[in-house]
Structure formats: structure tokens, C-alpha cells
Amino acid sequence: MKTIVISGGTDGMGRAVARHYQGRGDTVVVLGRDTGKGAVFRDFIPTDLSLVANNRKVVEDITATFPVVDALVLCARHFRSTRRQTAEGFESTFALEYLSRFLLSHGLADSLKRSQKPVIINVSGPGVPKPEIHWDDLGLARRYDGVTAQLQAGRANDLLGAAYASRHSGIPYVLVNPGAVATSFSGEYDAATLAHVQRLKKLGKPVEEGIAPILALIDEPPGVPLSAFVEGRPISPDLDPAPAARLADLTHHLLRRHP
Image 1: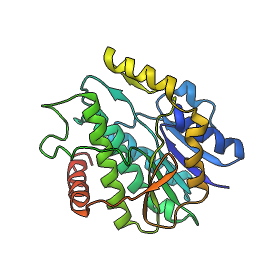
Image 2: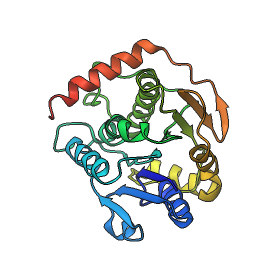
Image 3: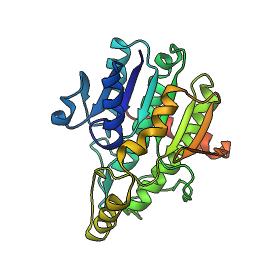
Image 4: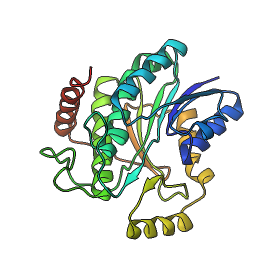
């Protein structure tokens, strides 16, 4: 039996992965905001993962209750056409889709290392061309749009994988791009973006098909520190270690403001 932690597990692909493993008899710890959707899970932690403090509390709660974690699946996302800042002062997309994944990945490292076959699955966007990190404006205060925020978070997760693999070689870190999947596409959209999302919902593959490569990776983690997949096909995860280390250092600096 496995113990699997899933962020963003109340909806879309995260929910489908959670239902699969709970149905199989595994322990599934689901993190999400919607208590109604979370009620179907035996181990549900209601939380807003865009807040640093909440991520740290979640890590404390999980490590106190589940000393061994076999898989961490990072799915939480929420698109915003209009910029929003969290109560802690971070741009919300960066906070939810990068800082949360950073905190959960590192915070649960000891629990993962106790597993015989640990793995972290970061459902982000490897293989998609992205701009570099906006080093002088991480919060996109001067040039925000929703797509730019999503692409920056995706690039940050690529670099998170590279930096994490160099620090925790015993925990395979897997970057996964599932392609177009007909999920709920959680978000707050302007009219043009919403029209595009509606087209994606019609054209995307079923959720059950989209999660199949993720299930395979959880059941049989890769034997290398860092790997990347697009729709189940392996791609080269080669990333420049310099920006990965720079972002890791900057992230630690930012998080020191929120002890």
C-alpha cells in the first residue's frame, strides 16, 4: 500500500488520480480548498495553498500523521486574467503554482526518503517554450497578464525540478506535461481567454486518458534524479543549473520573510 499526497486533488486530474488510488485501497491525502468536493476523501486537508503559512502547516500535519510518503503529486493551479496579490504579498499564480510546490517538495523530503520507491510528480509544462524568469519583477507588478504568469510559473517549476534533483538525488523528480486534457480549467477568465478555454475543453482528451502516464510514473518511478514527459513521451530535461540555483536561492530569501 502507498501513501500519496496530492495538491489540487479536489478537481480535474488531481481528483482523478486521488480517486484511482483511494479506490485501490491506498492512503491518499488530498489538499484543496473545496470542502464539498473534498468530502469524498478519507484524508482531506482543507487549505488555501497560495499562502506560505498554510503550506508549512500542511507539511507539519502530514509529517506528524504519515511518517512515510511514497508519492507527492503537484497539480494545484488557478488561472487569473487579473492580477491578484495574496495576504502575504505574493502574486497569487506564483504563490500557488510555484511557491506551494517548492514548499511541499522540500518540506516532505524526509518523509519521501523513507519510502522504498518515492517520487514527486510535478504536473507543469515541460517541453513548452517559455520566457526566462522575470528576475526584476517576479510578481509581474509592471507587466501582468494571466498567460505570462502561467508561463513564468511553469518555467519556475522546470528550474525547481533541476535544483531539487541536485539536492535530493534519492527522490526522483518528474516534470509532466499531460497535453490538452478536458478538465475544469479552474480560473477567473476574461472573455477572450474563456473562449479559448471552452475550445480546449471540447478538444482535450478525457481525464482518464490524461492521467494514465501519471499513474504509471507513480507505480514505477524513473530511476534517475530528474526526468520529464510530454503526454507520456520522455523528453530531455536538460536545464542550465545556474538559473535553477539562482531561483532556489531567491526563493529561500523570499520565504525567510515568512518564518
